[in-house]
Amino acid sequence: MKRALGAVAVLLLLLSACGSGGPAEGRARHPGVRSDFDGDGYGDLVVGDTTATVHGKYAAGYVAVLRGSAHGPRIKKPQVVTQDDLGFGKAGQGGAFGGAGTVTADLDGDGRADLVTQAGRDTLFVVWGSEKGLSGAAAARMTGSAPLAGNVDGDGHADLVVGPAQGDSEVNTVRVLLGPFSREGTPRRTVSLDLRPSDPRYPVAVPSALGDVTGDGKDDLVVSWSILADYAPVPRATVLYRGTADGRLVKGPRLPDGFYGSLVTADINHDGHDDVVAGLSCEMLGDVSIPVGGSRLTVLYGGTMKTTRITADTPGLPVEGPFSPCTFGGGPVVGDADGDGYADVAFSAETRAGQRQVVLLRGSAAGLTTEGARAVPGGFAVLLDTDGGKAANLVVDDHGEIRVWRGESQLLAFTAADLHLGPGISGSGHGLSPVG
Image 1 (cartoon, rainbow, N blue to C red):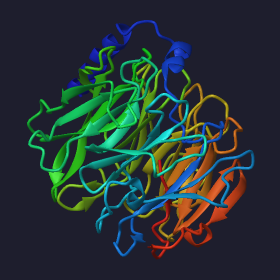
Image 2: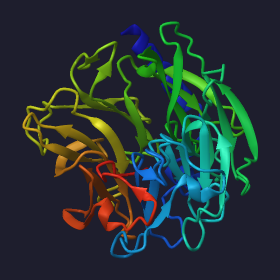
Image 3: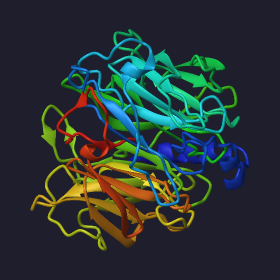
């Protein structure tokens, strides 16, 4: 307990020394990171299936872009991109193009979002936006893994934090790629960042999220200190690295003990500081186990360092338990679903009756609340404004069917069979999921 209190005290001192950049200043410096690949003001919905067979290669994967409009995503004539389209050789079996390591950001500063996605274990592809949307004919290739997009130096240009390539001996060293980028994928400058944990119990540091937690107009890097279980990193502690004008992020203190999990950032209480959301539905500590204290979703507020914890027993949830073990709080995502200026949080849960649900909780001046909460059937979700309504649509997958919601009204439902992916792409369709 003393360690947790000490970390909070140090972090509060850090926040007070970070300057006077308030909400307006911080947001003005943020680059656009919505999935608006054609620059028309509507977010474009990206869906993908990493299990799909492409030209005979199993699990080569693809992404399909449904361009946004005043009526939401347009299902006709989606833009389909595979690794084969990019001019860098054919995809290999198991490449899983368009998977979890996919982000969007305006890397070259032309006002249109670009798609950054991983294929294999150490290759990143950048597919550039244009007035016609994404085009596989214009792409760049970089080495690295698990990209994160943000603006760590506060100059208004999108930056990337990129993990090490497979076989890299410096497993705890990441690269900060400072924008703008050339069309060859070359950043303005590269900074090497050593994330080696100072606590010997945790051999691996994993960059997990970017967000302006300190409220100074520069994105900070949220890092998970992890153990290894079956050679996979399992988070056990969280550390903040503060963004700086030269891109050389400065290590801050550990966040309170017990705060770790699947991490995302957004300003939930609208105070000019991004807040950190941790979803901890399960743990892998040699065996799959329910976390001590139960499955949960926890929010740590950047401005005050106070926390809100949501569990299966929290009053006001729109779904009644009991819940299946290791499901509550899974896959948190953030976005302003009602357009009130407060970021909202969606996460997954599954009842013991086998009903998968996406739970949407509202942000407010007091933080995350169950007031006005709702739920829809489904598993993984994203929040994205595809119709220009200044409120994010809730996009969920339900066993391969994608549903898009505007408030409580369903805008669209479709499966892979509705996309007309073209020759050479096949699969069960059950792997189709929203990306981003």
